[in-house]
Amino acid sequence: MRRLLRPFCLASLMLIALPVLVMVSCQHKLIYVPRSYPQTHDAQWIHHTGGKVLSCHTSEGRQQAYLFRPRPQLAPRRLWLVCGGNATLATEWTSFMKNEAPPEDAYLLIDYPGYGHNEGKASPEKIRESLRQLVPLAAAELAWDEAQMRSSTRIFGHSLGCAVALLAAEEFSLRRGVLIAPFTSTMDMSREWIGLDVGFLVLHRFDNRKALQRISTDPQARIHLLHGSKDGVIPAEMSCQLHRIAPPRFPLTLCENCGHNDWQMRHSREMVDAMKSVE
Image (tube, rainbow, N blue to C red; front, side):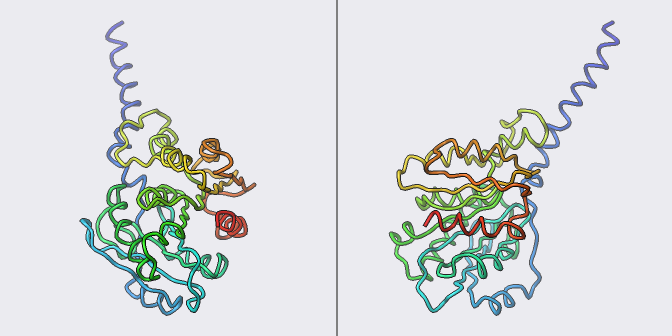
């Protein structure tokens, strides 16, 4: 009997261990999907927007972000830190921010290490290091002091970008913004990916729940959450959980028949309304 059970037990252990090993060894590729720009990209983007490419050097090498104002003749009311999803390049948000978002504001489109023209590899620590330099550079371009930067800067994130935006919120004491299809934490997402509770093995730890719990203690905080009812990547229930942390401060809009990547194509009005609601 023992001889019969032994191969069965070994096979069962392998079935359990295999997805765990895959997650541990491949989690960087599961979380980040970096893409590159063509060589002529920056010159064309500057010509199209009249914006400016900001750059700095971190431990990962050269990092860039893209700053522009739809109405450059006016002093901007707000600066939005725009953080895209894990397979998104920063300037893919240009059209929405230029043509539909509040035109009186300024926008800093942020690429992560390893994305676009940026060097290195992404991680929570390396992204935070980049934000520490790029956001003050944008404020300096707008001739804002630190107090104005803190009071007038807003966060805007989609998917992975929600976690990046909340890193910026923590770094610079920002309390207002829009989060689209946020997850609760990468530890929780590991359960969604492989069906097992192995969050303790996650090396790239983003915890949006804890970040919003800290923000919720500020009575002036307002983070508008958006999520699609047909999101097949990040369950809408995760936004519901974040909303329940502080319902008055974290309003939630659930968009019917909206998938994970439908926002710019089909739901721009909801995004604009959310941006205006946190002014």
